[in-house]
Image 1 (cartoon, rainbow, N blue to C red):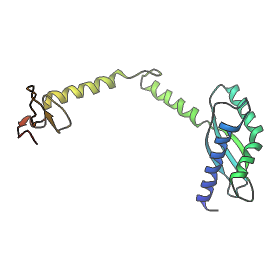
Image 2 (spheres, helix red, strand yellow):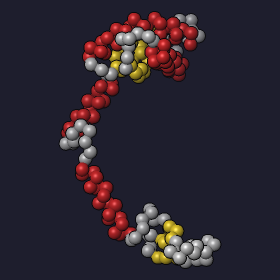
Image 3 (cartoon, rainbow, N blue to C red):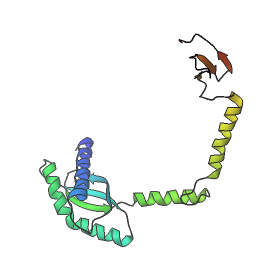
Image 4 (cartoon, one colour):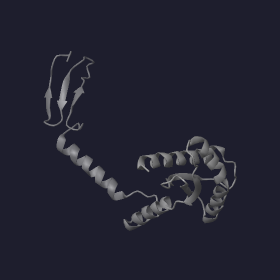
Length: 176
């Protein structure tokens, strides 16, 4: 079967499952669920719906148990959406990808010497240092090498322009 058709069916399965879980499922065991992706077999007979559940291990097990019992209801919603001969049998799989990515981020931050949720003082100092160097080298006003309009304190309109790259001032008539 063509891969783009499988991808479309998988996307429909993901959409129907996520909408049904979010809006129509009344099971109190099913909470904090995110449908991450769906995979459909080549013959469209089976579909795996990967879900991420936020919470403790016990809450995850309880939610997966609730989803297993609600799979028939979700499958009936999918049958209305898909106009195929067979409706895929839905199985829910706990997706550990989000958990692994959070763990990797924690390990990287720990290796770099950052604590959880803290900012690096080195990065702030580097940014401030480069801004001070740029102001000292370029002159009074820095706008990325562009020109700025300056006005006089007398209240008269003027078109004096300051070129920050060369430090020169051009004066022209008040209308330009």
